[in-house]
Length: 222
Image (cartoon, rainbow, N blue to C red; front, side, top):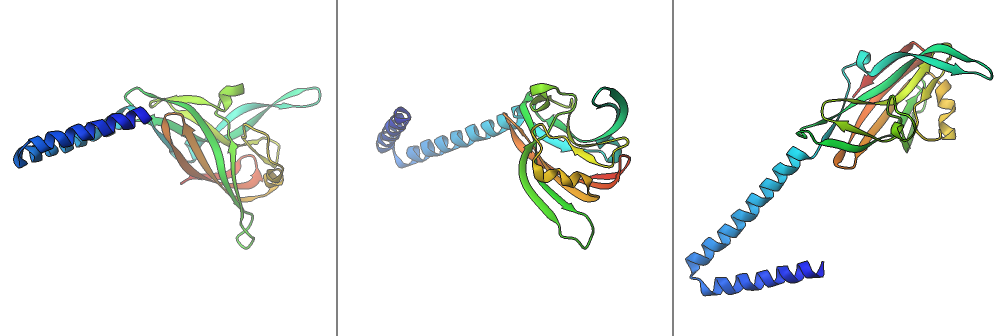
């Protein structure tokens, strides 16, 4: 850092000396040329960043695209019973990257708002809890790469046939204060954030209206 500052100071001194030797018109042209070169360099760097830096997009095409019905397995004390489940998820893609991949993508629940009925107090829980990527196992459930328009899906909650609760798709231990919420009907608003090692984080809100049955719910993406 000190070497860079020294070289910059030396360059300024040489530039001042050069300006003193030139006439007013030549000095003005030299200054204008330096300014134009600096602006052009800034524009080139901005365009390079725009074209090569991935841009995350969190989206959903409505209820059908953000909910998936799938077979599931209910693990009991002795038996593994086949059942069915619905997963609520958000689609994540990488745009404008000319083949560059958004690397090290992670999804988080950063805020949860809940209201049982219209006249009840609204519960707000600011947090930062890792969520699971769909179809991932182990470390792959928490971190993934997103390549261009090939989407990755971030799971938010899921329901299970025969159970009156819904379940959070946390990739970490579930905080105790979230446990009783799974048995409450009402409106839940999840604020989600997706980060990447080489892209700007993006956020999106998902409204989940739960009515206490595994098939009876609505989903809206803001």
